[in-house]
Length: 176
Ligand code: SAM
Image (spheres, rainbow, N blue to C red):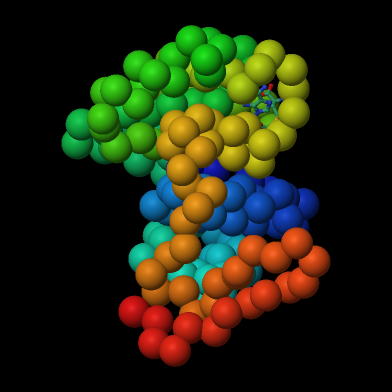
């Protein structure tokens, strides 16, 4: 997924949460457009180290338009999440059936017009303003039909055994 408009310090928590949702809900990486933010990369890598998915790719300071163009040139699909787009229920089956690598774009502040034009799909998770964290979570959940919520990564050092009352954390003997 591609995070536009990140403002270091101010967006630290939200952008970290965007990255955590991307990792936990089955995306393969997060690209932070334009600015560098080493602290976010460190936080996400730390989570991957313990809970798995060490191959989760995190990059910062990337030129977003160049990145999108090369994504499209290599056959990938670009989906921009915006409340102004087509309703998710009306497009998610088509997007899934295209079976392409998907670059999901979320904004922070006002997203420039060019991203609406360059994207293959502008998708609304409802037509109310809410949050990039929520929009990404719902989009990935619908894309993977809820299956991603059962993910336990094979290289996880820790995983959780569901319990009605207790915190049951299992330490893996030999994570991959
Ligand atoms: N005011 C900004 C604008 O007009 O573009 C949006 C700010 S919103 C806090 C940050 C991001 O959350 C948006 O760029 C979009 O990616 C996502 N978002 C918020 N509400 C959404 C919705 N209903 N559907 C899809 N994405 C949404």
